[in-house]
Image (cartoon, rainbow, N blue to C red; front, side):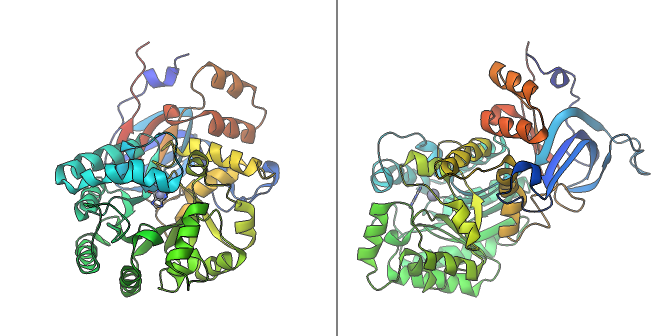
Length: 453
Ligand code: GUN
Ligand code: ZN
């Protein structure tokens, strides 16, 4: 069935003052693992107007209230009955791996050698990096993701290209060139001196400019020499405000390899910790096989695990115990980890997260999942004054969704008895086809094609 409001939608303004009328959903606090009906922090504001002034949210009010003075004649995009949420935040994703997403038949180490490393070599070419950055960020927006923590490749030009495209749209992006000086093929290794210089160049050019932030990007312990890890730790410590991203304890063969390479480390995590790489701005993907001591280290530093359920299922890595991590004080965000993960859609990743928890007897509510990809991630990144909420003063990073696409989802949607049931079935059955529009800093960067029938 055609969505009637789509055909009637006025052209979407892309700058200045304007307003959006829709049903607003966001979070003021962590709903935790409470039963949906008792979960705190859920903010549901049906039929409201969100007023945008330039890059920021200016005000939010019930649609029936008179507009503030000076706003009476601004264009109103009328999407009543549709769902408006903050743009989603993907805390771990690899831009070049759109080239290898959905590759058959391997676990992590074979997958890297067979598919991923060969594909990443091509990004030495500035043109490949430039085109790839446009393709990747465009795909994020077309999936409703407006902020991301991204691994490019070892090549400085691949990070430059991402920063360049993101800043041209005022998008919040966290990235840095990948560090890897061993156990990788020719064309995909750096060395300590050149890597440090490349990182410094990127920091000076991009860190803190517009909405760009640099991340010291250690691929994972096996692909850096101890000397490179020491350099990375010193760089991270010397530049407050930068982030650190890496992988940890994803796959059991990988962990055995790390034990062989670093026999004096207490654990895989300790390889990073003893070099000063763990802090409040550290984002560690996976953490499936961490022990209690590791979790205590993460808690003490306020570091976060970027839980990547789709990837963990696809690469057969294991089931992350989210509840235990949170009970022991570890910050957890959600990530697609494309191309280990099989979708950039955070809806699909939330649906996979539900299944990973269900396998362990835990129920993940739609509230907890959606909080995690909005305000939760924003808080763990230290960015909750800017992103993750529908709040005056925050940047207008917004996504507009239809509730159901296709016969089965439409049927299910009509039978939902309460708001959680409706949002949960949307999260479980939906994907990027439900997305109507994405705004980054008040600008429309993606709009679904109008239906032709
Ligand atoms: N560990 C080291 N590199 C990677 C990667 O590209 N993807 C995943 N999932 N794990 C990694
Ligand atoms: Zn990854």
